Length: 341
Image (cartoon, rainbow, N blue to C red):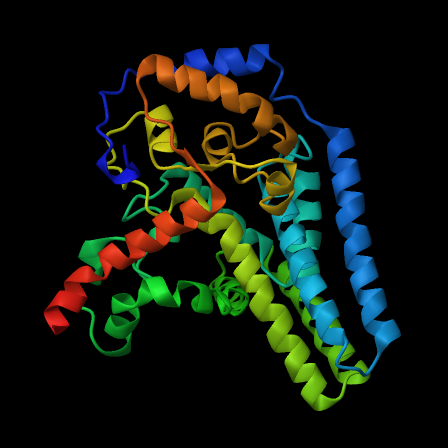
């Protein structure tokens, strides 16, 4: 059965409560401080090692290898900010927000407040055409009705968006920064002065390091390689999770709204690390506050329960998940290709 042909049974209203009792009984919602101490230490060490290597190598084209390493590191910092936003690390709001701003604003140059608001709306209504900002019609179009009537460059992109998907991810880092600045100027972030100051410190330190250490051409090359690969890797951690999955009508209960719109990615510990636990997207959406290491343990409980109540549980390999997302993008652009033909 494909993800786009799922037939939904009527909501019962109590299914999630029963599942929640099973997960609680297994102790999977408890905090895992030891795991996060190790993870935070590892990512901090990666960040320090990357910038230390940058300064030690100095004005050399070998720093492009450092740019690749820092692209991976920045994504891992972003994934930690994601866990902080969901209060997986700290139980209370204040320390989560403080650490989140350090990781997002100061670490990678993205507004924590803006992203948290956007991501919360996504969790509340995943894949909803009107309420989920992640499928809102922008450069890429995820719903056929949004593609109709596009003209010019926008129509060209939509016609070929499957082939342009990965090249466009190279611009994701820039888009995050632009959206952050827009949100701060619009006053939609709770601590705009603090977040703006942290973003300015990040930008000044980042660009200052490039200008001081590298030649002009090397600085431009480092900036392009680092930010492009950061965008690609970050986009690849989120792309497999919902793209190409059903778009709900708004009448589903909580469990079905989260399960039917999400896709898990099979893999071992390396996949868990590379995707920051987002490969267990179904479990994450059902229990967003569940610490990342517990998602793997919750999976068989959730999968078996979905089988019991007749709710389809989508799980596939990593490559196949991208293939499904690209296939969906290609299908959405089909009306514009037919119209042009």
